[in-house]
Image 1 (cartoon, rainbow, N blue to C red):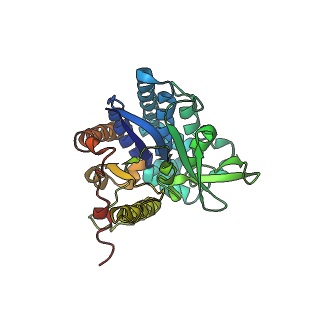
Image 2: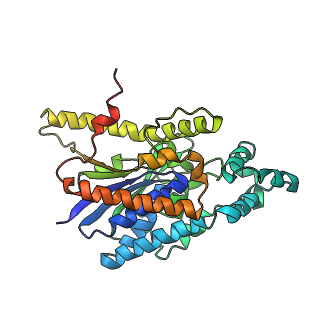
Length: 351
């Protein structure tokens, strides 16, 4: 029996390797058909690799998708440790004595401090975006090949602050870069907008939708949305240090749009349960979630900027394990009922 699902892939820097593991495990299941993908930031990167591979079709397409994902995260891992610092120094050149001082601190902490003082627009010929080559040089790079799942990629319009969702025919290297454009590190990505007739600048899609679910509401797509969650919804330990406080602020802000969409879905589901939606076209969506809250709580948000091979391998294996648990416990729910209880997510909102 074929189970058709939509995937919603969160962004979260190096933590996106968790979704790599999830996708790698899902691709092993012949009965799972991925109808559509909505991705943001690292989720857009994963979505691009997945789409470009699956568009080949059949067993070969699944193999190609896994090869793309392995390549993407292998390349990200090569930007770690000394190579990572070498890249940071090339992007943010500093005097030698300052460079020696930074060796006493983590790369993520150092980069955070530098980006508070230096804009990517200050870098002139030193500026580069390493994601360009990673996307371009995937083993199976064709993003515009027909077939395979629909792909939706979200970015944030700098001028309006609104979300922009790019879909199949609009997906290019530039749109993936736009979705993953952290403005303290990368220059805004400018893309022509046919509706306004002007070039619009875009930043990371996480500011406006991480990931956007509404593109997956289309009537021709299945009701089931599987959210691959990277940013923890809940942290039980109170942040007390400046770094952990800022980390939690970022997590909350990057989860806000998703929480709003899930709250709206819960409301519609309650109307369906009360038989108040009969004769209306609004879908009764089925929500599933693959996550590992314990792992994400154990990791600080700063590790999102530390894509070491060891961390990426750990995230991949955790993702595979989480997907395996969902396959065992939640796959039978597809097409019939939710495997994730939204009421538990919002149970404490009203006292």
